[in-house]
Amino acid sequence: MTILTLQKNEEVTHDTRHLVFNRPEDFDIEPGQAVDLTLMRDGWKEEARPFTPVMTEDASKIEFVIKTYPEHGGVTDQIRTLEVGEQVEVSDPWGAIHDEGPGTFIAGGAGITPFIAIMRQRVQDKGTMGGATLIFSNKTEDDIILRDEFEEMPGLKTIFVLTDQGSVPHGMYGGAINKDFLYDYANPKHAPFYLCGPDEMVDELEETLKNLGVPEKAIIREDFS
Image 1 (tube, rainbow, N blue to C red):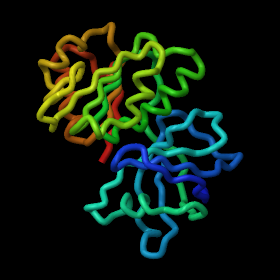
Image 2: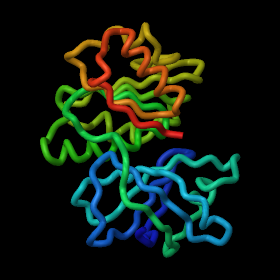
Image 3: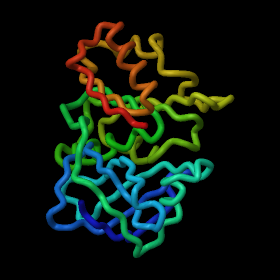
Image 4: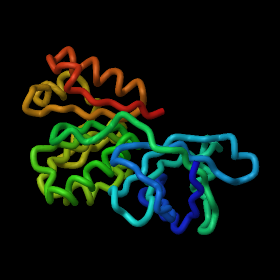
C-alpha cells in the first residue's frame, strides 16, 4: 500500500473531478492499470474502490479523473469534497487493459479512464493515435469527459454516442452502441477492440462483436462497476 497526498481537486465536467497527488519514486504503473483507493477519513477507511490513474508512465504526479455520484452518498461523493493536503491509500496496480496497438476503443461513461492513460502514453511515445478510433458513449453531451483533448489527439477518429439526449448535435449519434451501429467497425482492420464501461454494457458489446465475427483474442476488456 502507498499513501498519497492530494495536491489538486478540480472540476472536469458537472459530475467529474480531476485529482492530482504526489508520486512516490517507487510507484510504478503501466497505462491502463487501476488501483484500489481508500480514503483516510474516519468512517471510510474500509471502503476501497477501484480507480484508474490517467497520467503517462513517467509523469511526476499521480492523476485521476473520477466520476462522482453525490446522490449515492458514497465514496465518490466524499472524493468530490476532498481538500488539498488530505491523504488516500492506494494498492499496487492491477488490471487487464493495456496497449496492444492501434484499434477501436469503446467506452461507456467513466469507463473511458483506462483509455486516457493509454492514449496519452501513445501520443507521447509515437506522436499520433493514427489508425485508432474512439467510440465513446455518454448520456448527454455535457457528460463527455475530456472531449476537447480526444478531438485534438493527432490521428484519433472520435465518435460520440449519446443515449439520453433528445436533440443530438450534428456529428454525434443517438441511441445505443448495438449490432447495427458496430456492423461497419467489426472487421479485422479495426482490431483490437478495447472495451470498458458498466459490466452489462461490456458483456453485451463483447457478445455483439463475437456475433459479428470478431475473434475473442481480438477483444480486450475491463469491467467497470
